[in-house]
Length: 397
Image 1 (cartoon, rainbow, N blue to C red):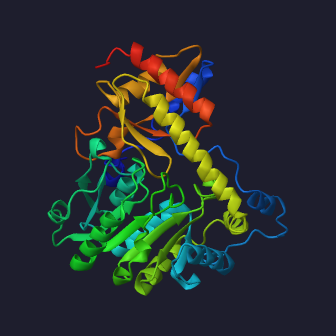
Image 2: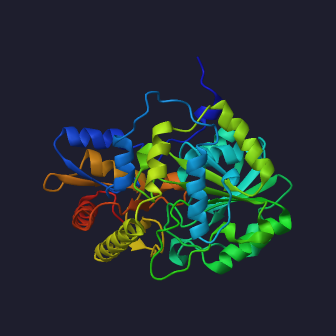
């Protein structure tokens, strides 16, 4: 029997599609350094782990469809510390940020509508757009320009009667770009002028380096009803597996619409919410130490990459990713080759081929995304192994 056209046309995740090759390499006894996925190795908050260990419920029940009120109050308090006033009624707990993105698309756009986002972009956005029947139009950004947003004229060229929303990830996954204040002001004016939604994925909000200022889309009162913030506990607290995210908006109609979808899927994860709520009470020093650690890892990654001939990267000012241009004919072929045909002293490296983060054919064919989520000595070794792979790769340019 035939699958749906929706599924047939959906691309596989560039982050996970090479996993079978990595598993096979490990089965051969090869150590694989994983730079392909944003899975932090930093311990989760002790308060969250203790809450999980000490659950005293006799029934693991459904929670409210929009999430526990106590957790939404904690998230509200968190946003107040960030200088933004969102009440618990404006916060919906979701099964990870992924569900928040999908529910935003389904609530605010119809099949055939258009969404504008950057290129490269987080690959899962494209899958969710496919699921919602939404066409994605892209703003091309350049590694040589730090993946900065193009000028307003280029953005407005993409807007037509089917355009419903602009989507940004700030700080950006996959590029690590932090959008400057003037860029956020430009986006705010565009969505106000054309009455568009602005979906702002801000799950990496804390991870900002070099003394840069972080500007949230939630800080523009003139577009309060246009903005939908996407958040998550996955990266902030190294809790990817609890699958707890949040959708935050002052638009009451959107909140009510999203609730219908939440009710259809019943409730977000019970155990995840318990861990998330407890993690909100972790000492501020936890995040301070985590951010400092990622800052050091970023330094090690950039310095190590700088030693490799023919390798080019932009300096990531946020998140924990870097897009890297390699002197190879095809990054997907290279990434697969590293896992299937290469090893150095019993080790190899796994990165994510960048073509999966682009829509336009031919873009990103020599780029990979690297996640600096390993401890510094492992990062340094991984880049060294990458250099050895580049020396031996038959398709080197």
